[in-house]
Amino acid sequence: MRRIVGSGVVALILSVTPLLAAETTHAVPLAVGAAVTGKAVAAGTRQVFDPEAAAGDYVKGTLRVEAGVFDLDLVDNGGRHLRRLAEGAGGVAEFQLVAEGSGERLVVTADREGTYVLGIERKVGVADQRPAPTAYLSPAIAGIAAAVAMGGTTEAFWAMVTDRGTPLVEDGQDGRKVVTFLGRGAKRNIRLFGAPSGDHEELQRLGGSDIWFKSFEVPDDTRLSYQLAFDVPDVPGTARDRRVAILSTAKADPLNRHGWPAEAKDAYNQDSVLELAGAPPQPFLAEKGNPQGRLNTLSIESRLLGNHRDITFYYPPGFDPAHKDTILLFVFDADQYLGRVPVPRILDNMIAAGAVPPVVAVFVANPDRAARARELPANLAFADFMATELHPLVAKETGLAVPAARTVLAGSSYGGLASATVAMRHPEVFGNVLAMSGSFWWSPPGTPEDRREHVAGLIAVGPALPLRFFLSAGLFETGAQGTAGILETSRHLRDVLQAKGISVIYRDYAGGHDYLVWQGVIADGLIALFGGDRP
Image (cartoon, rainbow, N blue to C red; front, side):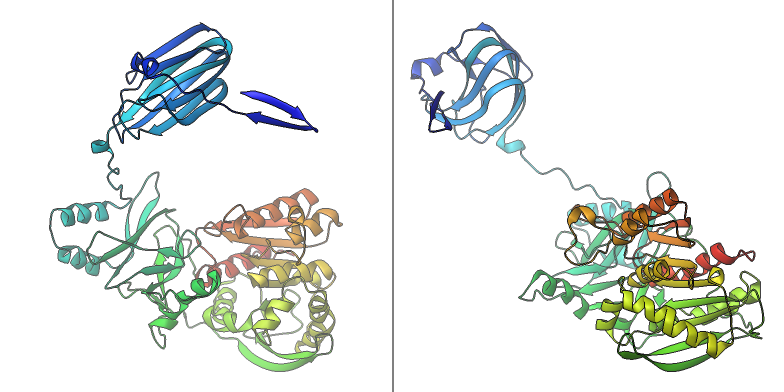
């Protein structure tokens, strides 16, 4: 190797001198598990070794340099250079190769006098280069895989699945459960929408059988809703175009006995439920015959936002505006929390059980999807609408004079983000935040990467606001490709709030971005903030 310096440029010129055939003929054999030591090797010295590899053999070894500097090359049986395996090595250099032909040699060249140890750790012949047997997470899948491999049918397996229902649940490690999602009858693919991984997952076909499956190990308190999408089309277009194509065939799992909602127009408008034995109770969901509150809907115009929307009021049974313990609850995404999540019934049951004081709820609808995406993520005009237009209207309509300490903003996803940012702008009006899987990863467009997580940043540099937070996130809401997800950013916000001295209650749930989880979380949050008549 020669160093050429000129015009401020340093170039390294590597020259590999062909070996004579006689040099390769007298190579030292190097067997697997053996090692050779070159001591006090002078600079420029070449030493040749025979790894005894046949064409196609996989060879793995180590060149450990104890002193000096060495190169390691592979040459053919005529001494011609094939590849450099280590250059200027000092210390330990691992190498791997696949022999192109028989008679290939390893050549160690001393760049600087020293000592080395060369060893071959492993050699695998072509006949032994076979993939490892598939390791199945699910014992049931392992059993049917073995049966199918021996020519058996899948009928008994499907009979068992039909009897038990899906997903299959089996014992895993350390108290966890192995959950296997199953599909039958697909031609090309089946995708899982709502997987514990937090992403769309492809089910794997078991050989050439009619079994499609995907297994996960999850906590024993997992609760989630999901759909299966059979034969999703591979549409041309962007990656997003291909991703959203899952919605064209996604529907409730035909083998799952627990549909949500229980009554739906069709399977495409229904999810399937996985609820393990340790899932936290949701005791306020069922109809219990308790006294019911009443609902009243108004359409209001906003001067600040230049649009109008519906606002729905929930008045508790026996409502008395003079009741000093009344809680005033604002809930974003009214369509979801009046329907999919039956908040009025939840409140009926909570109030009847004495879990919380009387609650007046105000459900805030979005004018449309575009308005939701524009207004809920940290929109100052929307925050001012909530405090200066909607709140006075609510006070006038209900006759309530509820202090900020008993007023709470609640929402999920962007609604959770809005709950935080509206209260942060107007803590004199809204003193409590109930954020379920809040989108705290969000930051304004153009924010530098090292300044992401807008809400945590504002809390960190701002004053200690007179607010109380209830934050929750799903264990399956993790980030991907180095980006923090809802789980990580919610935990980070919790830490920032604690460091700032702002009251915060935080809970993880073994679930995903899921209304099935949130229908229990909203009750948990209200009890955490106001149960036992907390101020």
